[in-house]
Length: 98
Length: 203
Image (cartoon, rainbow over all chains, first blue to last red; front, side, top):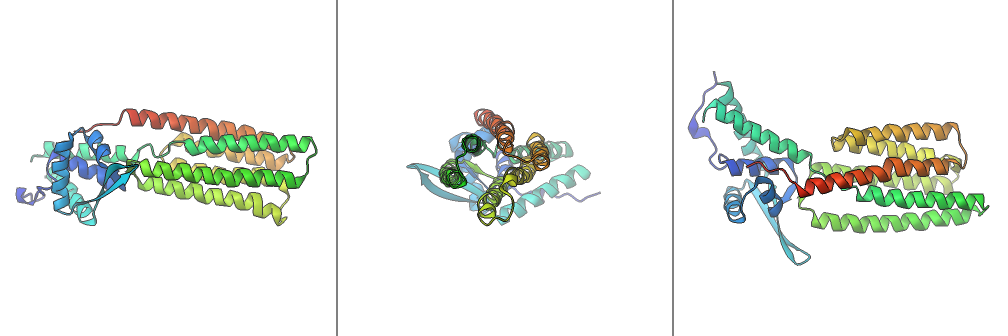
C-alpha cells in the first residue's frame, strides 16, 4: 500500500492541457508555439495562458525570435520542469498501485 | 484522483511521448539530392572510362560535384533548420551520423586515392560499407526498420564489388544509389508530408 495525499499533486502540471504540453516538451528538444497548438488541439489564447503558467513556475522556457520576418516562439522544458514531470508520473504510478 | 483517472492520464502521457519520439525527423531531401547527384557522377565517370578520358578529369569531376554538393546540402540544411517547428534529440543524432559518414566518405574517396593508400577500384565497395553503417544507425535512431534494413543491401553490394572488382562497379553502385538512396529518400519525403498534413491530436 502506497500513501497518497492529494496535496502532493502538482497543480501546475495537473491539468489535461498542461500535462499534454509537458509530455510533448519532455520528448523533444524544443517546439514552436503553433506546433504545440496543433498537436494538442488548443486555441492560441488558451495555449498562451497555460504556457504562461508553466513558464511562471520555471517548468518551461521560451525563446522568441524572427524567422523571415515572422515571429517564432520556441518552448523548451527546463531541468526543474523535467524533475517536476518525473515526480508527477511517479505520483500517478503510486495512485495506480494503491 | 482515483486509479482509473491516473491510468487514463498515464496512457495519454505515454501516447504523446511515444508519438513525439516518432516525429518525422528526416524529410528525405538530402537522400534524394545526394542520390541523384552521385548517380549522375557515377554514370559520367563510367562514360569517361569507356571513352578513355584520363584520371585527372575524373578527379576534377568528383571534386567539383562533391564540393558543390556539400555547399547545396549545407544551404538546404540551414533553411530546414530555421523553419523547423520542432527539434528532437534524435534529429541531432541523425545529423551527426550523416555528417560523420559524409566526412568518412570524402576521406576515402579523395584522401585515400590521392595518397595511393589503396587501389581506386575499391572506392565503391568502401563507400558502400560506410553507407551501410550510416543507414543501420539512422534506421535505429528513427525507429524505422526498413531504413535500418537498407544497410544489408549496401553491405551485400559492397561484398559483391569487393569480390568482383572492376569499373562495372560504377554501374552497380549507381544502381544501388537509386534503389537504396534515392527511392528511400522519396518514401521518407512522402512519410514526412503525410505526417505534416495530419499531425496527431491528444487533447
